Image (cartoon, rainbow, N blue to C red; front, side, top):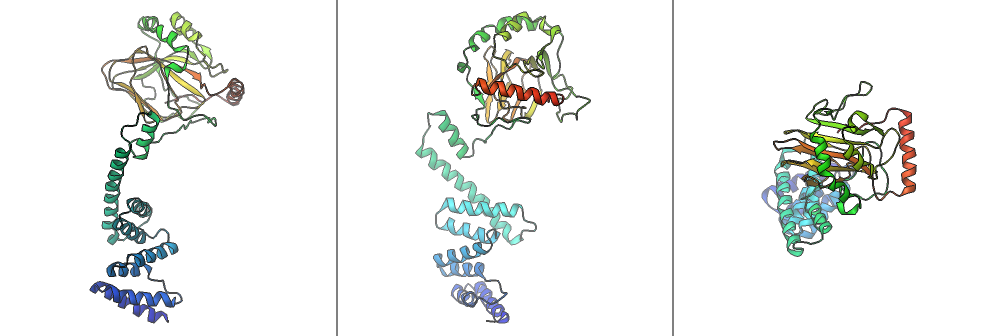
Length: 381
């Protein structure tokens, strides 16, 4: 078959489609495909439309599969295959083809206007299919009691976002992906919480010493943080860079005694670190990641008014005075004060319990070596 003959048959097939004559259209397209004319694109997509018009579902599917073998990201073919699966009652397959079509359309310039209604239909179908799937799962698995199963189901159904450790400076391999740790996992927590009234009494007696938590360093690029040099988020340091801040520590003997009992890392130039973190009404610490995933950040709420919250990963926590909060700050996290009073927590760090003593020794040596190369990176929120 010559190219001219193939073009003539293709025109006849298209005219038959316009008349609604699926049988005649299919005959024209079948002849072209059987002849395999050199340099002429095979009309698989048109054949699929003719087969649908003629009511031959199997042949329609085969034609679309052939088109997608040649062009796996052909938007129209993906949409038509999604529609075919929809009509067959296969929601999951239809959603997969529609998703592929929508993803390809999102990165394709000049998507034909004729496909825009089909793309909108694909989006609508996906929403409806998701609702049907959600109802199916909730009927089959009603109110799971195991928290991890419930959280995983929320991920499956798109009701919970997946967050993973993403430290900005150092990632330690092989640690569990846990945003929050329970207070009862650490034997020293109860004694520290019992010291809350004494710590609060010392804090209330102090009227100065707080400085903006995020401060610029003239030897480094300024952090892209709206709270830069803003006292709305401020800190009073007791230990900083592994050194006691004598002027502050002298005013907090009970607090320093409580901190001395804790398993705070000892890393030259870096740790211990301990401070009071203050957040005024209306302040919002934007989402960010901490430097390391080898540590846990601990907040002992000293003044915890209503309207204050902390999100770590997908979970939100509200501080309660005297109840320690322990979390992995290498997960994306943010904090806010939507109340009318200032929130203050005592903040310090501990090693992650999954890191054994030999690893802690080697990590300490590593961090000290890194810091010996130049000034250490600082948490900037």
